[in-house]
Length: 439
Image (cartoon, rainbow, N blue to C red; front, side, top):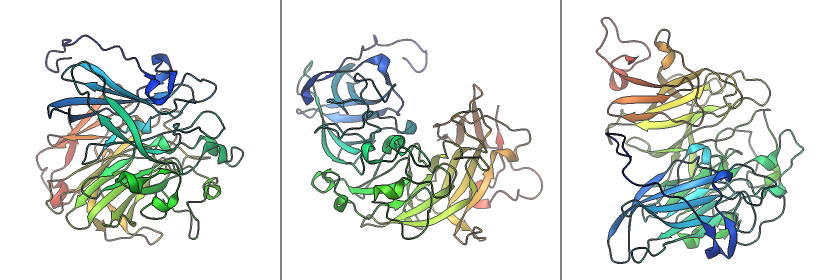
């Protein structure tokens, strides 16, 4: 579609794919059994002759995780310049399930152009045969078509599978056989050669982007550090590499990660990660060159605060803005439900802004360093909206775009400084001008 006129510029591509290249020609892409939930990846690739092509990758989840042998996860590649489909890869060519949904997060790409996704449930409680990759962080290599109208290739070259659904406990304080690793997307950290990913268990895995070091299997020795509890802290001495330690809600609440992590190269603290799991606080971490991820600070605020039972979904959806590498300009923006479960009900939402570098001088009540809250959308009188799950805020042209469940997008921007003292929720180096909702 033409972005200015809205007119159609190309005839639609009918997507059709099978897993013949993976030895399973009967595993076919069935549109009615797939959901395109993950964000799209638009990148540039070079063919064997050196010509550059805009290439779009779309990942697909499944509509039915169980009892449907025609449901598979897929990645489909399209040459945008030639406007044609060029390659496909199936997550479960010999089985079913393994959707790629990632809580709306997109396919990740490293500096070399290789791709990364995280898959979900297998759908059947049996060990997967070779080639099927449920509950896995998967690295894929795309081979552009060698000539016009020729097919390209998309192949899994490395993967890490921390657990199998069949090894999880379905009868505990939650159904842990429904704990998708792929509830969030992986992140290929630029310039560090690292891939990180965490899912519904709230456990972070750190891998080397090098395929030989990444491996093909479930060997925890390939990890850059032992798995860590990332979205919450269950207590000391709990080994996150032992699957039976994950089959328990330590405080009675779920702490799933949806969407994924945000990475930032902080001028003050170096490489940093930010995440916000269900029923938990926004958390900040530092990353050293060896791949060790260390807790830095957390917010005082909790997503779905006060929700009963196992709590509410989906946690906080994040984005970060800064004035390049200028110190004291980093802001973490977060959309989260104020209370309740946004998966089952329409619940009120809130947009918050946190200082990404400078801590609040007052620590949290548990003694941990506190991320400084700069502002939130409730400071605008009468400003209310319903939370739209899995949708992060977008920062562009000095404005913050917040999707809502009210059939609108709210736009926030800086306005002239109001007379009188600077509001207590603003700092001169960050939000010297009072943020106010625009029409």
